[in-house]
Length: 436
Image (cartoon, rainbow, N blue to C red; front, side, top):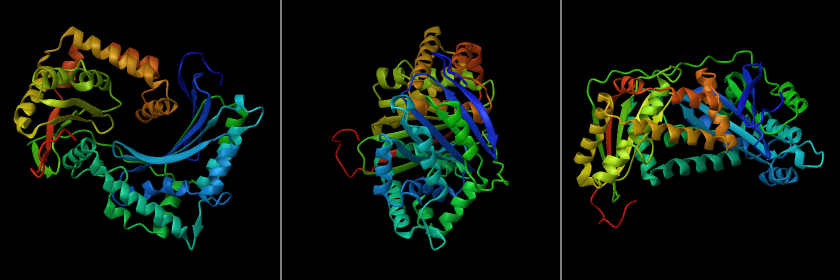
């Protein structure tokens, strides 16, 4: 289990009760960390209930029943941190918990990993419960906080328009469900039905645990052996995410809001499975089209035509989506759409310079190297590889990307289909006084 200097790898340690344990080997960090994910199918019935669970866990546990006591304990542990949240990858929802602390090497013999992982387990397995549900006063506070957060999504207009585009594009598919559900569904939660979702998570959701930083083998084994006493004899099998869809007609949705700058989102289906060999050319394709300042969208929509404040494309790997996002003046909407679609067509025709591919590969390689400076980014990278069973590490991923040819890029370009055009436009209630 020793570290290999300079190389970041992930090593599968054990599978126990539907929980897969991995160790991330990297000698870069002065902190040790555990990231734990429970995974569920994304569903309207459970999305909000799953999302509130990390918020409830952070409010304390049997041993530390108040935030003050919990924070005091974390201070004793040299300012250790325990946190959590939800995200979605394709049509699966990931309920994440993490703890991090300064490496045992700096603590004069104190075994911080053992103490911090015990605290994480207390919060996970012994939350604050009363009357057959979560503690009512804490639950109501966190439910109110969640409603406020969901309402605040509209404040980030770029992110709001992206999520609205996806909701419309995937209207009859689970991927349309926001990662933390909806206000309506949050308000249906109570301490009792949320505790039932918690029990379902603990007993039936498949889980992944990642240990990173300098942790000795004995502590890791202790962690695995003592992990979760709940009976997990019936771990659920998750549904696959469908990435294929034939588009018969492009959907067009316009919405008005009190803004001064329009937000244009164009949603495409890539029809590329995340575990397929075509995924690597798709990453290069996206980089050339709209991934960076050298991209076709940036050069042609923003720089040459001066039509956009920003123009970029992003991939959703697990659902097979690509969204092109642009901030524009409302009167430029038609011309911006036209130039964007011209760039997509140019990719299909192979109108790609050698320099475009070289600049994209350089940017991707830089991005992969930068990722290795963050423990969380490393965990997220390897979890992606484990979910798709690709087996790549950072070095082999870079090599796979470098092996992509122009023909490979043109081949995936043929599969990309426009699905939905969403435009969030000014409602005319304000004069232009600068972009929002």
